Length: 274
Length: 167
Image 1 (tube, rainbow over the protein chains, first blue to last red):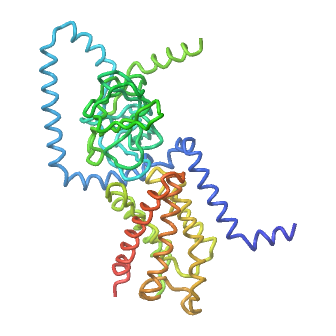
Image 2: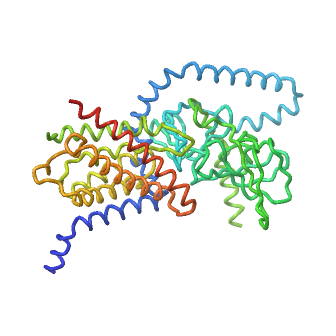
C-alpha cells in the first residue's frame, strides 16, 4: 500500500495529465449529453453577455449594411404580397393553411462563426421569448440552422456549417430528397447526398427544404446546384450546393415555430408503434 | 522582473477575450484559425509546480470551450501544451537564477523565445486540429491548416511581446 502511494506521488504529474485528458476526451465523445448542461455552452448568461456587448459595437459599424438588407427584404416581401393578392381565392385559401401553422420570431445574432469545424450561432432571444429547442432558423436568403439549446434570454443555434448535423433537403424540380451536409471546408458550399444516379440534376437547379421533418416547412430555399459529381460504381451522385444564405454576414434571423409540431410528432409516433 | 497573481489573472482574462472576440472572427477561407490564448500558458513563470500548470491549462481550455461550444476540445489541447512546456524548458538548461522569471524575449533572448514559442504553439495546434476533426481522414488538409494557423499565432505572440513588455 505504501509503495503504491509512493508510486502515485512520484508520478502525480503524469497521472494528473492523464486524468485531465481523459476528462476532456469524455466531454468530446459524450458531446451530446454534456451539451444539455447549458453552463458549458455559449447560451449561458455570462458568455452571451460578453458577446452581446461586443456585437453592439460591431453593429454600429454595420448599420448601413443591415439597413440595405432590410430594405431589400422589404421590397421582396412587398412583391410577394402583390402576387398573393392577385392569385385567385381558392389557391390563396390553400396557401393560408400552410402559412397559419408557422409562426416566426425575429432575433439578433450576437455570435456567429464560419471558420470552425462545428459552427454555432448565439441569438439574443431565449425561452422567455418563446424559443424552444428544435425550432428552425432562417434568414431572408435561406436556411441557417436549428435551435439547439435555450436559456432564459439566449439560445444557441446549430448552423448548417456544422458536421454534427444534416438537414433534409430536396431537389425542387424532381422532388428527390436526401441529407444535406457540410464537409467542413468552404462555408459557401454543402453537399446533398443520397440522390440516385438516374435523377437528372443541372447546374443552377434549386435545392429547398423537404418539409419531411417538423423543423422547417416545405420550400424554404437552401441553395442552388453548383456541380454534380458521381464516382463510378456508386449508385448515388453527390451534389455540390452553393448555400443561398450568407453565413459570414448575418445580423438578424427568424426563428420558425411549427404550431402543429406536437400533433405531427404524436401522429408519427403512434403510426410507428402499430 | 516578476509579476504577481493579479497580473496573471489580468493576462488570463485578456487572452480569453482577445481570442473569442477578435481571433475567432478572423477568416481566411477556413484555413487560418489562430489560437492566441496559448499566450497565457507560454508566459507562466519558468518554474511553476507542474500540477498547477496542468490545472491552469485545463481551466484556460475549458473557458475557451464554453465560449465556442466545443466542450473538451480546447481543454485537452491546452492540458497537452501545459504538460509539454516543462519538458521543453528542462531540455534547455535554464540558469538557476532565472527560474522565477517570465519566459519573455527580454529575459531569455529572441532566439530562445522563438524556439520555445514556435515548438510549443506548433504542438498545441497540431494536437488541437486533429482532436477537433477526431479522425485521420483528410490527414494532410488538417496538417496544413494546423501549420498555417500555428504560423499565424506565432507571429501574433511575437508581436504581443513588444506590446506587453514595453520598456
